[in-house]
Image (cartoon, rainbow, N blue to C red; front, side):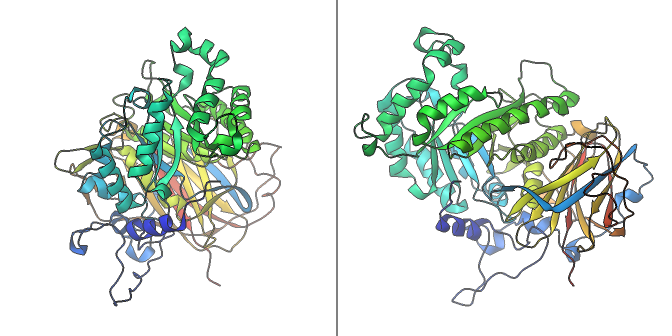
Length: 560
């Protein structure tokens, strides 16, 4: 796994760390040598700092606790049972899991002063980070020269203020090694080397039409792998035919256009090129803009199961060659998204669920693509004033980071729900405190659901719940809130932070069910419990889930 330099982590802690731990424990700022308190956000004066992570806390003494929504008069259409086994561990999720992807076009906006930059900083406010920023996409293979000085000035400042790490795209499609070499040389000159995670060659070569006067399929079959090897050797080696003169492990690829890459193609690519790679990259979009898409099709579970099964195979192949895999470009609908879908609450739920689906394959991260900054699927839209227009997907980013905190590991789940319930659960273990963080998602457009979260023993205290909601359902673009907090058109947060205390209850033993697959996050439709959970009384936490909503349930370890 790629290691993040210690001084980069320290920089993130200084610029983006939160006074609110992910599990909600409040701590005092550390005193400095001169007796002052350390700041935790940006280089702005303390009086001007706006800490979203303080505005949306999870600490029980900071919540305006209200009766749980499960007490609402709206009765759920169905009930589900989520039996969690904390001792059965899945994949660990790196602190660098979350990233964004931005085209070379208008990339300077990422350093735009005001609420826009503050909102980027807030993504590392809950203990995770550094944020991984990929500069690339369709614009990568259109570059004809290194970026201008204004670009490097903005990216240097962004790195200094937030501690981000970069994946830089180099033009591969043109076949001009000299151009790519000049791009690399400029990047090394302008950007601190410790913040460069990798160089990604090209973008989606499986869609290259006309390369070597061939169709995209013919090009992949005849030439791509060998072209990539020739290209990377010229960039890495003083004498291309002599490997001892090469600098290995600098590049990312193949930057494939979808997770449905044939595993044998990935194996072929890595067999030839693995010495030069430090990261394997593929892309994932739920659908194409050219196709008919609806809220229901966006959140359809069927295609995801097939795609994630293939991604898991790609991860396994990559690991055989000692490489991590990252979904370096990801979003709802390709080609900038679709209005009414990519900018809706439905997109936020897809993003949240999709992030955990990727993590559950063993992939080490995602980069959510923002296009040139004005795409429908971008989480933030820039304004000339430096303010930001916040889209619903940004709330999903925040909830994801709250759930991951400063260290998280997937744990085993048996989820029993009726067919068609469209309910998902993602249980995580806080690797530092031992507390549990469970992300619950109800993807149903109209039907509420009740969830009984069961644990096998009484080692846990009452839970704390934070909700992601929309006022107008899955199509909502404006009325989205997280923890009762929302944003105005200038990107400023407002509202009174509110959450719920979910009381722990004794649970009766569950009857055993037949054999079934029980992976983290897997939806199981049988009644009853797995053999491992059957017969154990344990405890339960009952949560009401409105239609089209998500929630984070934090269950701390009980103080004995």
